[in-house]
Image (cartoon, rainbow, N blue to C red; front, top):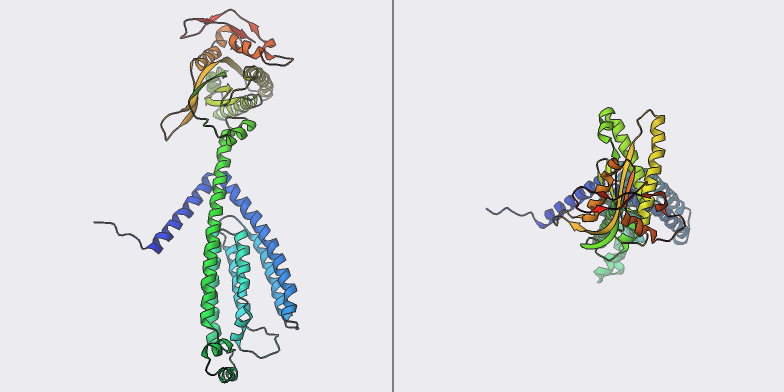
Length: 464
């Protein structure tokens, strides 16, 4: 049995509801989106209130030219009230659903409707209530709607449109049933325009001109819908920009900020599989298992946070890429995703900075009564294979190859050689080609060739 489909209007409402729920979930899960929406809301609302104040001030200057009489002070006073309401709305502005803010918006359109459908109590002449429509005041609703697009979400803009339509209908009914009429004016119009019923209806001061009022409502709803659609598109743009900011933040976890800008601007497929020569650095905390056994979980996590912080600092400050965290260890590369002439020298500088940062960190640990730590570092230079690996739904940028294995083995060999850092001669040779007065390799000394686990040939190494 086929499942009955919802009618088009209900399908549309259901789709809107799903989009709203998706937006709320994204805002909760993406702090950048929440910040972007909050910033957009506050900046837009402040701009809207300033524009509102200026616009109402200009209207206040216009009114005496339209009605040069003491009764105009009534409208001037209401303008001041609307300006005050606007600044109160700015004070109550918040991201998300706010009953107080919605109440103030409703007060705006409600007072505006009341102002345009009830006579000025200080007006000296006795006129029919329906004659108020001849002043074409409905156009001011469009001004408030336009200002609302600067401050409110597309949902609130559409709500304003529906509220105005409903209130204007209520006002129309109130004027029809309760408004003051002067029958003699209708009779005079009938006599003056006898034989011309269309003109008579137009000129009758007691006529509410229902067709014109319905036209105003319909056009206003159309404009509100268009502006709400524009607001929705702008909201989607803000969300896309926030997602881009989140992606850049994720990149900044692995790449220095200067490289993040390059990656964001490049048209090249960074994930394409290729081979290039890079420097690979491994570092680890020696004896971390024993440390974790002898200290509380809080102390262990605090140690790892501080350790990862200065490792990240050493890598990024020397133009490296943080490839991955390996528990208490870290793998970094210099020359990914793009190679540079000084990659090998930068890797050596990062290794030396790691040693210095560890010594500084150990002094801090000693003052807190915590056992100092020792780090081991291994660095090698050579060709690697890099690019996106894994299934299409779970791609991951990876660096693999013999150079990575050698760097890992060099880091492990620090225990046997009794040193903090072991680097390959190939890395030293590449670093020596870089220009500079103080080469990092001067702090290293050559050692006898060593044999690494899993490799047949020995490798020449240098140590600190």
